[in-house]
Image (cartoon, rainbow, N blue to C red):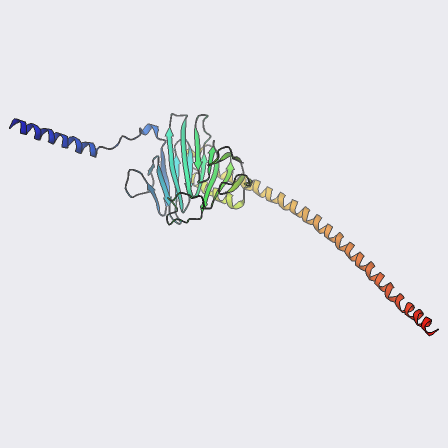
Length: 316
C-alpha cells in the first residue's frame, strides 16, 4: 500500500514539475543590456511582428521596441521612434524594418543593427563613441554610420504576395537609395564587403541590385531633401542631439539652391556657346550656299554663248 502511495506521489510531483516548467517563460536578456527604443508617434496601420508573441502587436505611443522586432507600416501610415543614446528615426508608409540588434554595452558603447526590406526610413543620429556601431542593412547593401542624418529607401519588384516578409531572390530587381543630409555613410556590398561607396553630406546614390561598379554619387535633389523635413517632428526630442534639424534643412536648402543656380549658370554658358557655334556654322553654310548660287548663275550665263558659237560653226 505504501509503495502505491509512493508511486502516486512521485508521479504527481513529476506532473507538477513538468507543468511549472512548461509555463515558465524563457529567460530574457537583461533589460540593462537592451538599448531602449520606444514609439513617440504612430499614424494609420502600424504593427510589430514579435518572435515570442503570436499574431501582430499593435503599435501605440510608448510601445517598446525589442531586439528582433519587425515593424510593418501600411499605406498612408508611419511611425516615429526614439532610440535612447542614439537618435530618432521615422519609418514611412508601406515599409518593413527589422530591429536586428539593440545592444547597450555600457553608457558609452552600444550596437544597433536595422534591416530595411522594403520602403523608406529617415534617421538622425548622434555622434557615436569609438567602440559603438550603427548599421542599416538592405537586401543588397550595408550602410555603416557614425552620427549623421540620412535616408534609406528600398524598392522591389514585389513578385511575392507578401513582399514584407519574402526574401529577395537572385532574379528579383531591387533599388537601394541612400541620401545623406549631414555626416557620412559608408556603403558596402552585402555580397562583397570589399566593394564600397562613401556618400558624403548633401549627396545621394542609387544602387540597381548590387551593381556598385556603375553606381555614382550625385548631389542631393530637392525631392530627397523634402524627405528629410519629417525630422522636424523630432525637434523637441532630446535624443536627436544638439543639432537643430530645421536649421540643418534650411542650410541644406540654401546649398542645394546655390548648386542648382550654379548648374543653371553653367548650362546657360554652355547653351550660349553652343548657340554661338551654331550661328557661326549657319553663317558659313549660308556663305557657301551664296557662293554656290553665284557659281551656278555664272555657269548659266555662259552656256548660251557657247551654244551660239557651236551654231556658227555648224552653219559655216
